[in-house]
Amino acid sequence: MKYISTRDKSTSVSAAEAISLGLSREGGLFLPDSVPALTKADIEEIARLSYPERAKLIMSRYLEDYTEEELGSFCSKAYGENFDCPECAPTVKVGDKTHVLELWHGPTSAFKDMALQMLPYLLTAAMKKTGETKKVCILVATSGDTGKAALEGFKDVENTKIMVFYPSDGVSDVQKLQMQSQEGENVGVIAITGNFDDAQSAVKTIFSDEKLREELDSKGWFLSSANSINWGRLLPQIVYYVSSYADLVASGEIGNGEEVDFCVPTGNFGDILAGYFAKLMGLPVGRLICASNANNVLTDFINTGVYDRNRRFYTTISPSMDILISSNLERLLYLLSGDDKLVARLMAELKESGKYTAPAELMEKLRASFAAEFLDDAETKEVIGRVWREKGYLMDTHTAVAYGALEKYRKADPGRTCVVLSTASPFKFTPAVLEAIGEDGEGAGVELIDRLSSATGKTAPKNLAALKTKKARFSKIVEKTELLGEVKDFLR
Ligand SMILES: *Cc1c(COP(=O)(O)O)cnc(C)c1O
Image 1: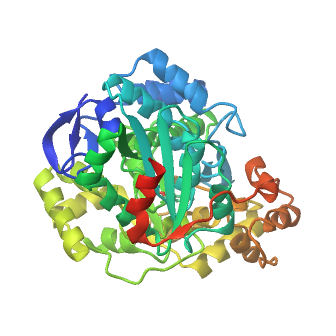
Image 2: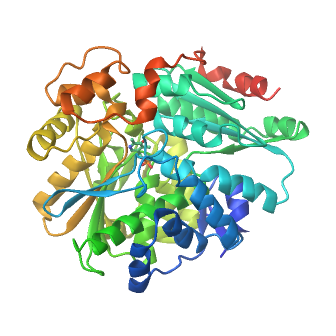
Image 3: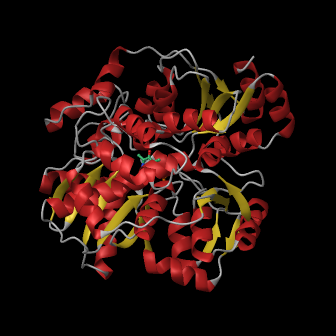
C-alpha cells in the first residue's frame, strides 16, 4: 500500500514517509491508495480481542512497513495502564437504540488521547525507517484538547521536542491549566492573542516557510505536526468505530451486518473522517451525522454544497469545535471525487476567497453517507440537563452537541441504532455543565470540579482532580506575528 497526496495523486510514499512528513510538499494531505477490507468474520474475531489487539489488527492493514512486533508493542503501551478502564473506549447504552462511545478515558480526559497516545510511537519509528537522523520538533495549534493530549503523548520522548500554541481566550480554564502545568523537559506552551483559526494559520505559515526549514535543517531539526492532518493521527481513530460496532454485536444490541449510524461532534473533520474510513473498509455504517455548534460552516456545506468561512466566529461552550476551516474535509473531497486537480483548485479558492462550491455530483455522493445538524449553546445546555435528569447520564458540551444533533436527525430518519461519540469528560467543561444541570457554575473552572462531583455523585478523572494542586509553568502570551521568533528560540 502506498500513500498519495490529495492535490497530486502521482505522489507515492510509504506509510512511514507519510507519517514522518505529515503534509505533502505541495500542501496536500496523505491518503492510502486503497482501503483494506473488513469482513463479518473479522468483526466476530475483533469482538473477542482486547482494545490493544483490536488496534493492532486494524492498523497493521494500513502500515505494511511496520512489523507485527512493533505494532503489538506500540498498541499495548499506547492503550494500557494510562487509560482508566481496560476497555479503553467503552460503549454505554443511554436509551433505546442510542449508545454513547466514551473516548475520554485516557490520560487527559479528551478523545485526542486515542490518537495522541499512539502517534509518538508511529512517528519515532517512521523516522528510523526513513533514515531520518534529524530530531523532530512537533508544532501544534490547538483549540484546547489536542495541545494537552499531544504534550502528554510526546513529553520526554527521545529525539523530539513539542511546542503548543493555543488561543488565549479560546480554551476553558481547565484546559488552560492542564497545558500551563505540563511537565517534561522537551515541552513548550504559549498563548496567542486571537482565535483558533489565527493560531492554526500562523502555525501553517511556519510550516511552509522554506527559509526556516533550511535554517533548522542545518541545526539538525525538522518540523512536524500532531494535528489531524497527519495520517498517524487519523489512523488510530478508525479503530474505535470498529471496536464499538464489535461491542454492540457482542452484547446482542445489533446483529452482525446490521447498519449503525454514528453521530460525531465535529471540528477539524478528523474524527468523522475516520468513521468514513471504517465504512469504506466495510463496517456496516449507515450515516455519519456531522454535529456542529454555532460555527456551523460544515452544516451549511453538507446541506448546500457551498463552503464559506466568511462568517462570524462564535466562541461557544464547546470550544474544541470552534473552527471555521476543517482541514480534513479535503481528504473527503478527494475520496469522493478521486480528482486531485479538483481538490487542488477548491483548496486554492478556499485560501484565496475563503469560499468554494463543490460539484453537484460530489455532493450527492457525500449526502449518501453524511448528514449534518447543529446546536447553539442554549440548545446544548438543554440537552445536558434533560439527559442528566431523565437518563442519569452526564455529558460534556461537545458530546451534548452530538446527542442533540442526533435527536434533530431522527425527526427525519428515526430507524437505525446510533452511536454518539463522546469526546470529552464533563469534568473538563465544568461551568457550562453545572449550569446546564441547574447548579451554580460561577467560579474558576478548576475549583468547580469538586462542585460537579458533589452535585452529581460522579467521580472526576484523576488527572483533572489533581489539577487543584498544580502550578502554571507556562504563562507567556504573544501576538501571532511573534510565533516564528518563539519557535527559533525554542530550538536554539
Ligand atoms: C477535537 C475535538 C472535537 C472535534 O474533533 P475533530 O476531529 O477535530 O472533528 C470534538 N470534541 C472534542 C472534545 C475535541 O477535543
